Image (cartoon, rainbow, N blue to C red; front, side, top):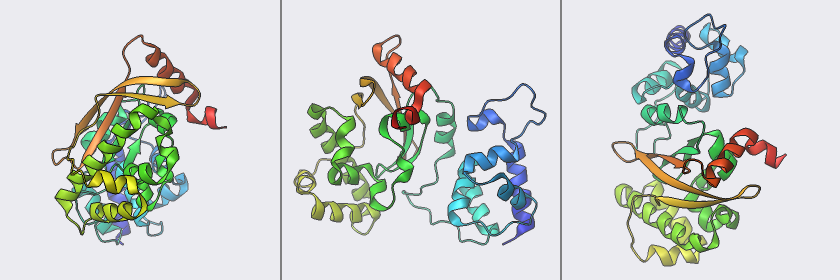
Length: 279
């Protein structure tokens, strides 16, 4: 671990960012153009004291999990992320199509979306990051680990995963999940994580096994969805997906028609949030 290099790199990246670059509001009495140390700490989920010690070259070696959080908070490119790992005494993550590091271009768009649900998904339907409104509708996906991080796996192994969709729409959603997984499987092959997911689901879900034998292949999302929320009811939304160049990640954006009932419901969720309904 090169503490001096790490401290200089973190400080430079923090000072080069502005609050609006990471989805924060600029206060009227702000004296510095860059991010504050406390803001970086908040974005990464670490204590302000811990981050300060890293910038001062006297902190302990950060874990790989902490480095991933820092790379996301500081909006690092993949090359910058790899550099951060190396100067921290870690091997850089292997670059694959399922790299969990959110593409900076998608993250920048997501940072500007606070009035409509949005999330970044991997090609295995793993939620890499979601905004507050998406969490209010779909739940906080950061709690999932292992194969359960994939919405495809949860769809066929956890009945509660389907509660957000009307019963009539569930067969179509299940077929879409399998068709998307078929794309990832074709690109990665049997030895990939997609292949592992397929084998696990073939054992655990007869429904999945039957759909998998249809050999349907598609890499797209439904243009229109009806989502169910336990408090506000049905929400009619249009769905748009912004893909990275290699199509390994997708920014999913859900919008309601202006002045519609669905728009009013999203506005209510934006004010009350997930915690209001679950407390």
